[in-house]
Amino acid sequence: MSTHTKLQAAPPTAATPAKFTIEPVRDAEQLRQYIDQHWRTGHVLARDERMFDFQYRTKWVDKRLFPLGVSVLGAYEGSELVGFLGAIIAPYPRPQSYWLALWHVLPTLKGGGHGGKLLNEMQRLAVGTDGRGKGWIGTFGAGPEALPVYLKRGYACRAVRRWVYTNPIPDPTPPPQSLHAGEVRPPEEWLAYRYDAHPIFTYERRRAGIFRTEQNAWGIVTHVLRLDDQTPGGWRDDVNEVFLRDSARALAAGCNYLMDAWAIDPPGTGWTLAPDDLPSVFHPPTARGNLIYTVGRPFVCGDVQKGECDQDRPN
Image (cartoon, rainbow, N blue to C red; front, side, top):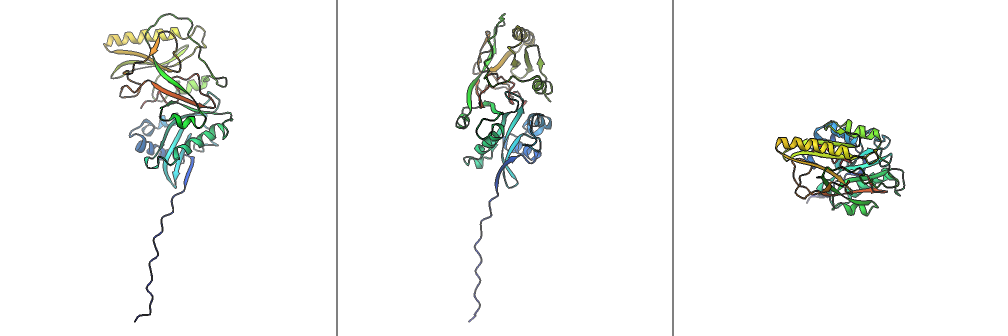
């Protein structure tokens, strides 16, 4: 009889799970590939480096916080990017402001708190742990399903609706915009960056308004990006002139015409709520609703219109 003892194989051990971290995005190209694969194939931020830089590499990004100069936080499991939250860094409504733009976590990780951790860290960078820092964080374009996420973290919220201009009549006194006491208006330096230096769109900047007119499968649409009620005499002449010019062009072409604006309150007389079946700016032009939300911490902006955040981005 053999005296040798049979050796037993050691039981298999589970692989050590990769460490989960949230940190400034490590690789811009990896992020663009993630957007293409998990957000939307062919998304403009994935295929167009100019738009990626325009959105996430503004001159107001603090490289002490984001060493690559890319204002995006990544969620990582080891070396794998499993989620991200981006912000457009701008000099208003406070001099260091984080306009949240694109937020995603892999579907397999939903419910694990990863998205909330991303928001908590971005919020910490923007306004500190107590929300009393000198910065600001928020977004324009939040859906109703996202509101509880913001509200339980102390964000203020207001509904933003879509308005259409239908009655070009003289009115010398448009209603003034109602600003929060801590809110500053966008400086010229930001307007020049946001509109004059846009890598794809061309904007018409007038004395008291900023416009972009496009022709799509629905017809000709003039998007009112900003209206300045601080300009002497108001913006009424600018709106009327653009409306009459572009509506005449649509009439000559035998197509529909629309002038629209997104705002918390009606911009003035002549503006009415958009009907539900009206197509949106995003392509292809289909109806996607005319109610969204703007949120902010420590306050919500009063001066918020379509040009904020990434709502006029070519999709």
